Length: 273
Image (cartoon, rainbow, N blue to C red; front, top):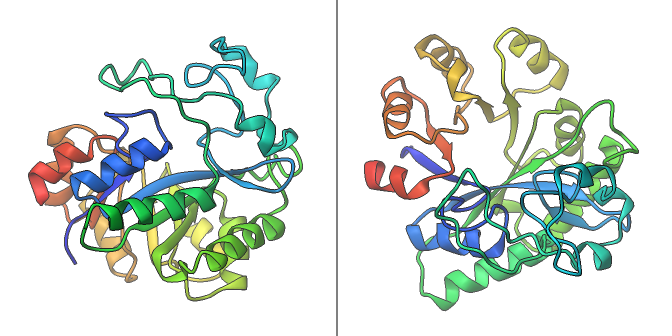
């Protein structure tokens, strides 16, 4: 397979994360795999957001006042209806990305991302099909606090993907093996992945999962040739995250990673496409 480039939360160096504009820009760059994050609202809508709350530095309230870092305590997405969530503007630039453009953008529904990104690509005459790598944000100690139980969560996401007719164009991944396990139980045919940030529990988590996933995506700082060979020996594809420096991108390619997840897809595309 070709060395795969995934746009982490979209083309994040250009536009605020997980916005339609960031996804459109990634498509413009030639990226054909978007990595995006999912949370759930009070009315069981699947919302594209890295955090299960609204806060600084991304969002401002419906009156236009920027939120502060403590506001995550007030605006738990799982306790808000989507009609209230979409009143918040989450298009403020992140200070870690000084070239991000300020835009007006609410946190979109996953269904809208599917519809509008595909429509955008058609309108621009772009070749290829966009693949959506969906990270389900889930924590074993936060059921009922920030998200539904794993069985309900998995069913919500899969039902939406099926309704969009995109079962062949998605992957599902999470740090929480429980929700991956539940999704696999409902549909064996979608590619699944585990996200990991340490090496010591890899075998335990794979055993707990109960099946061999197609992907295991580790933090790039724990990746070396030995880990690469371990996964490849089990026919597991390994795409490290979040690889942002040119030298690290080249290093991941050199040791045999199958691709990278990056905030700077324009740099990766200049190296590998």
